[in-house]
Image (cartoon, rainbow, N blue to C red; front, side):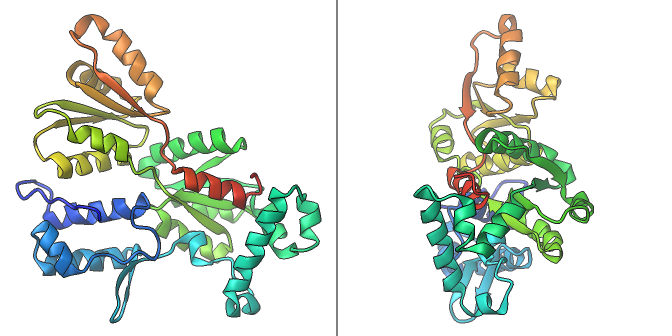
Length: 327
């Protein structure tokens, strides 16, 4: 069971702390689709918050589309994008959703046995047609205020899928989809609801990407001595902010946290000179190494560098490969 921690003396409201921690649990797949959230009573005992405060957080999560309330049962993580069965367009498939799942599993088995898409298309025309059309164009959609998160996803997807991937601001997604007849849109679970709302009218599928849960890094940070300085460097300003909130919830004011994007030379230089530990995403790591090397004469002891190998969860990469026929 995930342990949520609230810092009572933080400037961040307790409800916001809890909201961000639950949203992180959903985005990192620690709370997968269909997972039942703890009762307000159980969460109140764990966090010390009033049940009314927790109810308010749950209502906000439901309004934002992350969870759904089932009367008499509880609060559950809502399936999103492809998980919600958005491809079940015909009345027949809507009446028999399990049949579609069986067809999909059979197709994957045929492909794994060496059957070509052309051969399998004769058997499962609808599924193959969908994959061929939608894999023609892969779009990564993120808010314009955090294009760094999209750059990070594009960086990792192009390395893993070996195909071109286009980065699009969510604010421009409708205009882009108006000019194409086939595409697959992928995005982080942090942004899935906004993307779905724009893609659904265009009959374009949306696949949410799970983010890496950073368990190894968080466990390491738990062991750091008090008053250590931790630097967080990422292409995404949103990731840096989320990391700062999560780390504050984990250690409170015991650690000093500094954040920067690799292109911000001034902040990056300050981190290199002050931090005992620097955690960086894969795309930003060369810039961190260069900054440490440039400041070599100004620092007594170089900081410990931790390179996070991936931002997108491995299961999401494998799902996307399967959906695009790249397995």
